[in-house]
Image (cartoon, rainbow, N blue to C red; front, side, top):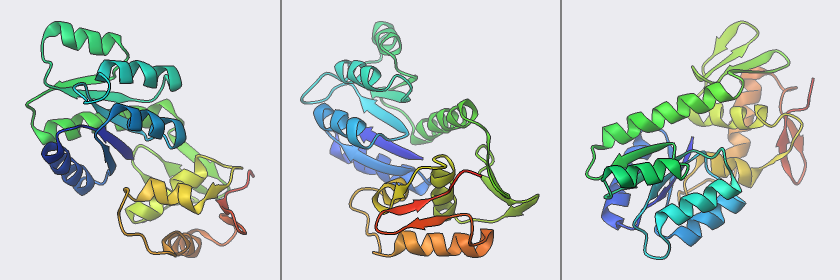
Length: 219
Protein backbone atom coordinates (compact mmCIF):
# COMPACT_ATOMS: atom_id res chain seq x y z
CA UNK A 1 0.00 0.00 0.00
CA UNK A 2 1.55 3.29 -1.14
CA UNK A 3 0.89 6.45 0.89
CA UNK A 4 1.54 10.02 -0.26
CA UNK A 5 1.95 12.28 2.78
CA UNK A 6 1.46 15.98 1.96
CA UNK A 7 2.63 17.87 5.05
CA UNK A 8 4.78 21.00 5.37
CA UNK A 9 5.89 20.38 8.99
CA UNK A 10 9.16 18.58 8.29
CA UNK A 11 9.69 17.15 11.77
CA UNK A 12 6.14 15.78 11.88
CA UNK A 13 6.50 14.38 8.37
CA UNK A 14 9.78 12.66 9.25
CA UNK A 15 8.21 10.97 12.27
CA UNK A 16 5.11 9.90 10.36
CA UNK A 17 7.11 8.52 7.43
CA UNK A 18 9.22 6.42 9.79
CA UNK A 19 6.16 5.12 11.67
CA UNK A 20 4.22 4.31 8.51
CA UNK A 21 7.15 2.54 6.88
CA UNK A 22 7.60 0.47 10.04
CA UNK A 23 3.98 -0.63 9.56
CA UNK A 24 4.68 -1.79 6.01
CA UNK A 25 3.32 1.24 4.12
CA UNK A 26 5.43 2.52 1.22
CA UNK A 27 5.42 6.20 2.18
CA UNK A 28 6.50 9.24 0.17
CA UNK A 29 6.45 12.82 1.42
CA UNK A 30 5.86 16.21 -0.21
CA UNK A 31 5.50 19.62 1.42
CA UNK A 32 3.53 21.46 -1.30
CA UNK A 33 0.16 21.00 -2.95
CA UNK A 34 1.25 21.60 -6.54
CA UNK A 35 3.87 18.87 -6.32
CA UNK A 36 1.28 16.51 -4.83
CA UNK A 37 -1.13 17.12 -7.70
CA UNK A 38 1.65 16.38 -10.18
CA UNK A 39 2.30 13.03 -8.47
CA UNK A 40 -1.43 12.21 -8.51
CA UNK A 41 -1.37 12.83 -12.26
CA UNK A 42 1.74 10.82 -13.14
CA UNK A 43 2.02 8.11 -10.46
CA UNK A 44 -1.05 8.07 -8.19
CA UNK A 45 -0.62 6.52 -4.74
CA UNK A 46 -3.16 4.27 -3.04
CA UNK A 47 -3.99 6.82 -0.32
CA UNK A 48 -3.25 10.54 0.15
CA UNK A 49 -2.73 11.91 3.68
CA UNK A 50 -3.28 15.64 3.20
CA UNK A 51 -2.57 18.58 5.51
CA UNK A 52 -4.80 21.58 4.82
CA UNK A 53 -2.30 24.28 5.84
CA UNK A 54 0.11 24.05 2.93
CA UNK A 55 2.47 26.89 1.92
CA UNK A 56 1.45 27.17 -1.75
CA UNK A 57 -2.21 26.06 -2.07
CA UNK A 58 -4.92 25.64 0.52
CA UNK A 59 -5.40 21.95 1.21
CA UNK A 60 -9.12 22.09 0.43
CA UNK A 61 -8.26 23.29 -3.10
CA UNK A 62 -5.81 20.40 -3.41
CA UNK A 63 -8.58 18.04 -2.30
CA UNK A 64 -11.00 19.43 -4.89
CA UNK A 65 -8.35 19.09 -7.61
CA UNK A 66 -7.67 15.48 -6.59
CA UNK A 67 -11.39 14.72 -6.77
CA UNK A 68 -11.58 16.16 -10.29
CA UNK A 69 -8.62 13.99 -11.32
CA UNK A 70 -9.58 10.79 -9.52
CA UNK A 71 -12.92 10.62 -7.69
CA UNK A 72 -12.04 7.24 -6.15
CA UNK A 73 -8.59 8.06 -4.71
CA UNK A 74 -8.89 7.91 -0.87
CA UNK A 75 -7.86 11.10 0.93
CA UNK A 76 -7.40 11.41 4.70
CA UNK A 77 -7.19 15.00 5.91
CA UNK A 78 -4.67 15.75 8.62
CA UNK A 79 -4.92 19.29 9.98
CA UNK A 80 -4.97 21.67 12.92
CA UNK A 81 -8.37 23.02 11.76
CA UNK A 82 -10.45 21.09 14.26
CA UNK A 83 -13.74 23.04 14.31
CA UNK A 84 -16.93 21.31 13.26
CA UNK A 85 -17.27 23.64 10.25
CA UNK A 86 -13.74 22.76 9.12
CA UNK A 87 -14.46 19.04 9.39
CA UNK A 88 -17.72 19.41 7.49
CA UNK A 89 -15.95 21.40 4.74
CA UNK A 90 -13.33 18.70 4.40
CA UNK A 91 -15.75 15.80 4.32
CA UNK A 92 -18.14 17.63 1.99
CA UNK A 93 -15.17 18.40 -0.24
CA UNK A 94 -14.61 14.69 -0.77
CA UNK A 95 -12.30 13.57 2.04
CA UNK A 96 -12.69 9.96 3.18
CA UNK A 97 -11.62 10.73 6.75
CA UNK A 98 -10.54 13.67 8.90
CA UNK A 99 -8.01 13.54 11.76
CA UNK A 100 -7.42 16.79 13.70
CA UNK A 101 -4.04 17.68 15.17
CA UNK A 102 -2.69 16.86 17.66
CA UNK A 103 -3.24 13.15 17.19
CA UNK A 104 -1.64 9.86 18.17
CA UNK A 105 0.21 8.04 15.40
CA UNK A 106 -1.45 4.67 16.21
CA UNK A 107 -4.84 6.27 15.51
CA UNK A 108 -3.66 7.48 12.10
CA UNK A 109 -2.35 3.99 11.31
CA UNK A 110 -5.65 2.44 12.41
CA UNK A 111 -7.62 4.79 10.16
CA UNK A 112 -5.35 3.99 7.22
CA UNK A 113 -5.90 0.28 7.86
CA UNK A 114 -9.65 0.87 7.67
CA UNK A 115 -9.23 2.59 4.29
CA UNK A 116 -6.92 -0.21 3.14
CA UNK A 117 -9.52 -2.85 4.04
CA UNK A 118 -12.21 -0.87 2.28
CA UNK A 119 -10.08 -0.69 -0.86
CA UNK A 120 -9.67 -4.46 -0.77
CA UNK A 121 -13.42 -5.02 -0.53
CA UNK A 122 -14.32 -2.55 -3.29
CA UNK A 123 -12.15 -4.54 -5.70
CA UNK A 124 -12.47 -8.30 -6.10
CA UNK A 125 -11.37 -9.86 -2.83
CA UNK A 126 -10.00 -12.87 -4.67
CA UNK A 127 -7.91 -12.50 -7.83
CA UNK A 128 -7.25 -15.64 -9.89
CA UNK A 129 -4.67 -16.35 -12.59
CA UNK A 130 -4.45 -19.99 -13.63
CA UNK A 131 -3.70 -22.11 -10.56
CA UNK A 132 -2.63 -19.06 -8.52
CA UNK A 133 -5.00 -16.91 -6.49
CA UNK A 134 -4.72 -14.01 -4.07
CA UNK A 135 -6.97 -13.14 -1.17
CA UNK A 136 -6.40 -9.37 -0.98
CA UNK A 137 -8.04 -9.05 2.44
CA UNK A 138 -5.94 -11.67 4.23
CA UNK A 139 -3.01 -10.89 1.90
CA UNK A 140 -2.50 -14.60 1.29
CA UNK A 141 -1.37 -16.29 -1.93
CA UNK A 142 -2.51 -19.77 -2.92
CA UNK A 143 -1.21 -22.32 -5.40
CA UNK A 144 -4.29 -24.41 -6.02
CA UNK A 145 -5.76 -24.82 -2.54
CA UNK A 146 -2.41 -24.63 -0.76
CA UNK A 147 -1.31 -21.38 0.87
CA UNK A 148 2.07 -20.02 -0.21
CA UNK A 149 4.10 -17.90 2.20
CA UNK A 150 5.42 -14.77 0.50
CA UNK A 151 7.50 -11.96 2.00
CA UNK A 152 5.80 -8.58 1.80
CA UNK A 153 7.60 -7.35 -1.30
CA UNK A 154 7.12 -10.59 -3.23
CA UNK A 155 3.41 -10.41 -2.38
CA UNK A 156 3.25 -6.78 -3.57
CA UNK A 157 4.92 -7.65 -6.90
CA UNK A 158 2.49 -10.53 -7.43
CA UNK A 159 -0.52 -8.41 -6.45
CA UNK A 160 0.47 -5.61 -8.82
CA UNK A 161 0.84 -8.07 -11.71
CA UNK A 162 -2.40 -9.94 -10.92
CA UNK A 163 -4.39 -6.71 -10.61
CA UNK A 164 -3.20 -5.83 -14.13
CA UNK A 165 -3.57 -9.16 -15.94
CA UNK A 166 -2.88 -8.69 -19.63
CA UNK A 167 -0.99 -5.44 -19.06
CA UNK A 168 2.77 -5.05 -18.88
CA UNK A 169 4.20 -3.62 -15.67
CA UNK A 170 7.57 -1.96 -16.16
CA UNK A 171 10.36 -2.46 -13.65
CA UNK A 172 9.97 1.21 -12.65
CA UNK A 173 6.25 0.78 -12.01
CA UNK A 174 6.91 -2.23 -9.81
CA UNK A 175 9.72 -0.48 -7.93
CA UNK A 176 7.36 2.42 -7.21
CA UNK A 177 4.94 -0.01 -5.54
CA UNK A 178 7.68 -1.46 -3.34
CA UNK A 179 10.07 1.34 -2.44
CA UNK A 180 9.76 4.93 -1.23
CA UNK A 181 11.47 7.78 -3.06
CA UNK A 182 15.17 7.90 -2.24
CA UNK A 183 15.17 4.40 -0.77
CA UNK A 184 18.16 2.41 -1.97
CA UNK A 185 17.06 -0.16 -4.55
CA UNK A 186 19.37 -2.83 -5.94
CA UNK A 187 19.50 -2.73 -9.73
CA UNK A 188 18.20 -6.29 -9.96
CA UNK A 189 15.70 -6.13 -7.07
CA UNK A 190 12.60 -6.75 -9.19
CA UNK A 191 14.30 -9.55 -11.10
CA UNK A 192 15.15 -11.25 -7.80
CA UNK A 193 11.57 -10.97 -6.54
CA UNK A 194 10.23 -12.39 -9.81
CA UNK A 195 12.77 -15.23 -9.68
CA UNK A 196 11.60 -16.19 -6.18
CA UNK A 197 7.95 -16.01 -7.23
CA UNK A 198 8.60 -18.32 -10.16
CA UNK A 199 10.31 -20.85 -7.89
CA UNK A 200 7.27 -20.86 -5.58
CA UNK A 201 4.45 -20.54 -8.11
CA UNK A 202 5.86 -22.05 -11.31
CA UNK A 203 7.70 -20.63 -14.29
CA UNK A 204 4.63 -20.20 -16.50
CA UNK A 205 2.75 -17.58 -14.49
CA UNK A 206 4.89 -14.43 -14.88
CA UNK A 207 6.10 -13.66 -18.39
CA UNK A 208 9.06 -11.44 -19.18
CA UNK A 209 8.53 -8.80 -21.85
CA UNK A 210 12.10 -8.15 -22.91
CA UNK A 211 13.24 -4.58 -22.54
CA UNK A 212 9.92 -3.57 -20.96
CA UNK A 213 8.95 -5.49 -17.83
CA UNK A 214 6.66 -8.31 -16.72
CA UNK A 215 3.09 -9.44 -17.23
CA UNK A 216 0.62 -12.17 -16.40
CA UNK A 217 -1.30 -13.12 -19.51
CA UNK A 218 -5.06 -13.80 -19.41
CA UNK A 219 -5.97 -17.48 -19.07
